[in-house]
Length: 457
Image 1 (cartoon, rainbow, N blue to C red):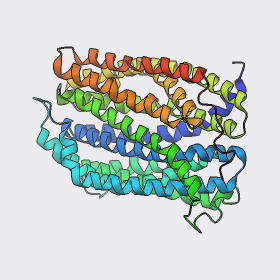
Image 2: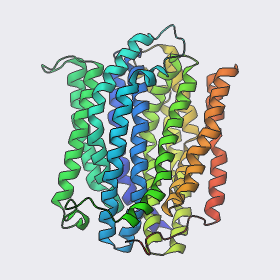
Image 3: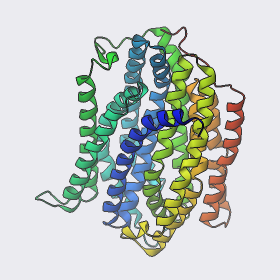
Image 4: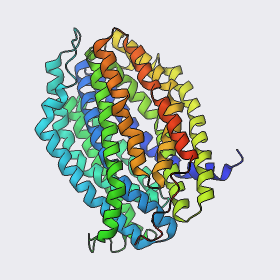
């Protein structure tokens, strides 16, 4: 607690992100519970599509991260034109991600969904699940573009230290989503009863509202956010800077994409033990994702604050801040672990499904919660390495490791051993302790300390 100043700055930046992401995940939780009342097939279908869209979302976050590293350092340097160019690069990168994502979902929807329906089940109808999933995905595609625009603006505002506007936009989207979920899933207030399709429509409407709020409000305050003044007079980015951003950004893009793909592959491996496992993990993910916004937001704050210090060439302060925030992130999640374990037996009862699936959900919640401090510390390590532009290291450290160790481990254990699913899940989660040790050594060796914008324009 000797460095209360850095904790305060981190929380001032992170708390609005926690609120925004918490609200977004709360919407997902409400969706999950409401759709869960329609039956196990509907719940499983939405869970599968959510896993696929999560890969797209992480690809967008990865695409924004390269320009984001430069944006945070340009802001710390006081270079407004450099920040504008980083902002413009986000548009180019996200456009390619968006077009590629839509093409993949349209052309390979049945194949991708079918990967999760290979396990046998006496309680879940795979054909009905497939139909629900395709209906849900076809509508959710319309929400991808608003999501992308929101992330471009929200990430840039955060890099300037302003995380309030994205938070308010998230709050506005929640009201829309919850209300229209109720109207359209169940057919209330004269609206048609659309079930799973209604949940998708409500989510798309919420994305559109969120985009409008954050973009309109940002432009309304152009005097404060100088980088928006004349921002669309050109989309040209100096070629030298564009190449630098792409060199730093591509490893992060592939890292986020492959890391999310690794999570999807893990779920697919678990699913061969039965569709009940997928349904149980869906229950666990719904509540755990709501809680993990705390350490995810703190990780983002670490990247921004440390990046600003590096851009200002305050290397010693950057190092002290990084270590302080790592331990702070890990410690604060102990509270979340206790909360999740406390509600693990209650939360699954909100779902209209079998007691077996509820029991799966409870155990997955407990196991995930026990590893929360590890994930929080690991998240802070990752963002510290990334803040100095060591994107190749983070690529090897994160996604390459995931595909080299946990993914093959889960596949082999699920397909070729008789170990119970909970034992497999614990073993795979524990594999991240190796990453923590490696990451800590890299931070101690100071390989991440560098100023990327001393000569960038």
